[in-house]
Structures are given as structure tokens and as C-alpha cells.
Amino acid sequence: MAREGEFERVFERLKGIIEPYGRQLHVMAGDARNYGVDMAPEGQRDPTTWFAGARINKRYVSYYLMPVYVEPALVEGISPALRRRMQGKCCFNFTVVDDVLFAELAELTRRGFDRTGGDPGWGVARRQERGMAHRKAMSGSVGEGRNG
Image (cartoon, rainbow, N blue to C red):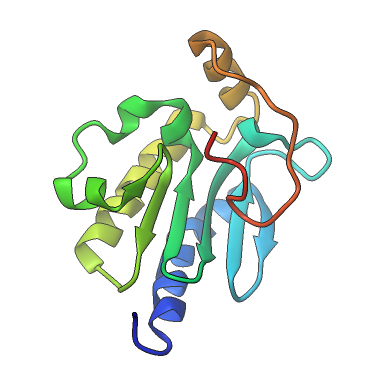
């Protein structure tokens, strides 16, 4: 188990990767345990418009990056160490601060943003191209129900 306060340090660092995009997009969750950014304003959101988020869980801190779910080619070439942190298609879990992996994750996030252009319609179009399901917005905290 991580030392007292370590999850908070991990969360703050991961949140720091996402925050610059929150200034350009729409912050959808922002408290001491959850932070998320969506490409669409409230009322126009669904799982295809979600960009990224971080959340403190019981055993780790999760970083969600939805562009890699819709555009799996974005993770081609990531390091084996970062790939080992992946759970599912768009979630990366951490228990301690790792400067090297966080720098790589920041670059992956930048590439994801560059790919989407911050366009809320990007996810819908990519899902349709790939025959992926399109679901209505789901309530809940950052990342909840968004890995599928």
C-alpha cells in the first residue's frame, strides 16, 4: 500500500497533465479526488466527448485518456513500462509518482489532444468509422462507466 499522502501526490501530478486542456475545453469534475475534462459543454456531453480525467481510487490513482480508446494507434510505440500501467483500453493506474512515465503520459495526452483538435464531434465520427457503439452520457464520477 502506498504511503500516506502518496496518492494525493500522484493525483496532483496527473491532474497537472490535464489542467492545461481544461482551460481550453470544459472541466467536468474538479475536487480533491476527481478531475475531468470534456470537449463539450454541460448538456451536450456523452462518452464520445470526454477527453481525460484522473481519479483517486482505493488501491491506485487512475488516469483516463479517451482519445486512445477511440484511436488505439495513439498508444503504438508507448514504452513497455507505460503499457504495463494500462488497464483496459484507456486507463493507466499508478500508486507512486513516476517522472519518466508521467512525462510520457503528458506527451501521449498532447498527441491525443492534437488528434481530436478539441472537437466534440471527433469521438462520434471515429466511433462510427470503426463501428463502435455510441452510448448516451452516463452519470457518475470521472471515468465511471467510460471504459466500454
